[in-house]
Image 1 (cartoon, rainbow, N blue to C red):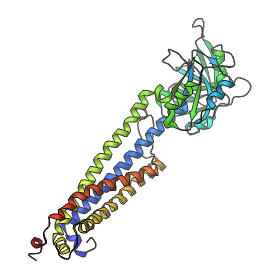
Image 2 (image 1 turned 120 degrees about the vertical axis):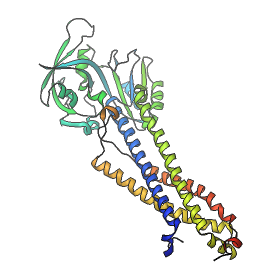
Image 3 (image 1 turned 60 degrees about the vertical axis):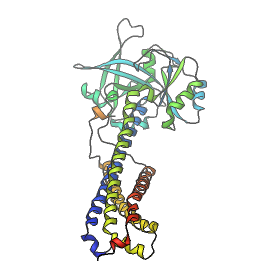
Image 4 (image 1 turned 90 degrees about the vertical axis):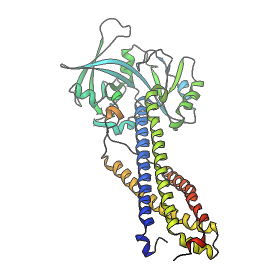
Length: 401
């Protein structure tokens, strides 16, 4: 039917081409929306987790800020209790202290985050823009790792020194002064991080707070299954001392995670609309094809063909046409995906989306599932217009030539 030379001159040929284009555009739009949604979700989750930990174990505090106020003892027994969880990946101890960096002309508020010497700097490799990570040895290090945002505001560069001032633990008297050396710069694209977070030696924060060497502010724990972070946080809490709390990253930054969860709803709306548009177009094209081939249907019935056999003929044609549309739609979607992943030609405002380049992410099983879903729904709905063959009477359509 579709390879006949006269087929290209028929009305159904033009309508089918339009329907095939609609399917291609629909599947391409869905793939692009999915790639952007998953990519943006993964990127924001990754940045939030890398800089803040997936599970935070810290003392119970009536403290809305990220500043460590109450220390607790860092013991091997407590660490082993946390590491016993089957989804445990890694952990490190931290402590944070609010302060101010000051140059001769400018000053900037910062959040000094002290990390231990076993901190895994490789996780921040993708955010490193200049210099190197701080090196912590046996002696207390004065090297710090700051963002490009803070460095630009204070006109600092790698290798420069900067004066830092911190309030005393008692809250009275003169502020404590430290001199730090800039070892490297990073850029996360996350304004809440870039505007104030500074990495330093954990022992610097311990000295500023007058803590003992085995007192820390929190554990940042990373797990193997991010989807189960809230559940893992609850399970870790069961084995902790009564004075410690375990909170998931989605709980501590609930507004961000609620916002990115809306992306799935947006993709679902696009999915429903595009599938409806594509299937309705294909159903219309199939209906026109059946009506245009009514004489053929009548002839097949006269020769003894069953209704189901004739329906299958048109169903196979509809599925073949739609498969062609799906092929080109997937091709367009993958070209867009790989070009954006390679060159990042679409940019975003980091103040709004927390990233400067639109990230993309697609899993093969999601693509296969999407195509199978499209085909299954379309096949189901194409069955309805194919029912019209039951109403075609051979005596009526074969009466005139």
